[in-house]
Image 1 (cartoon, rainbow, N blue to C red):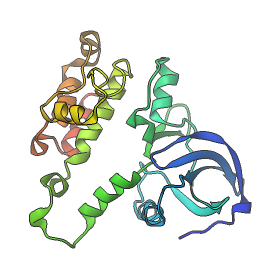
Image 2 (cartoon, rainbow, N blue to C red; image 1 turned 90 degrees about the vertical axis):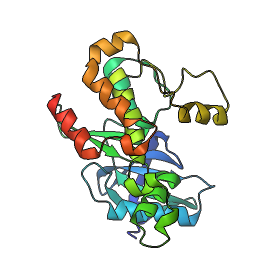
Image 3 (tube, rainbow, N blue to C red; image 1 turned 90 degrees about the horizontal axis):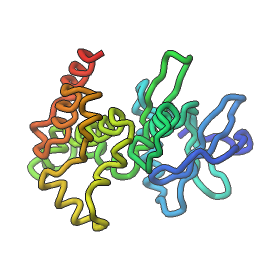
Length: 240
């Protein structure tokens, strides 16, 4: 699995908290790293699955896995350190807006210089791991699998919400903050009925109709009507 002697890790200050672990700054072999210390309620199986996917999903936009260790009887996942922290922090720093706990908090920003930045997915979480397993598994009867899993449209919806955060710079608050309800079931019902986050007319004018149309197509209620990743990339490329 890539075990590291915890004595080789110099633990620093707290960077933030993910879906099932708290992140600390650290150094390993004189290089900065992020140390994800798992919460006490995380099972060993969930821990091992997170490690498994970090090791096999090798991509420039996925956080690099360094190793694992135990610290004070808690499992720790060691990954590369991203100097700009999260997309959430990056937006706050560059636009000065006060944002709440958004999903953009799970996207880290790393830079090799002032001109080049890279976004990296950092937190898979139990739900995301289960979704990846469902897509990769060759077992089970496809007759009972949800169309969203088979067609891989489920993450397009989430990406649409992240795009909404980016292009509105958080000025609209967090997704669905305009819905006056504290009940999750009521929120689910509103979303299923087709309600989506609002976009201020002034922001609409600033980002243009092409971006608005793209975002709205990504969070359509019917998964099969959402665009593919390829078409999204093509659309964004034409807007540069």
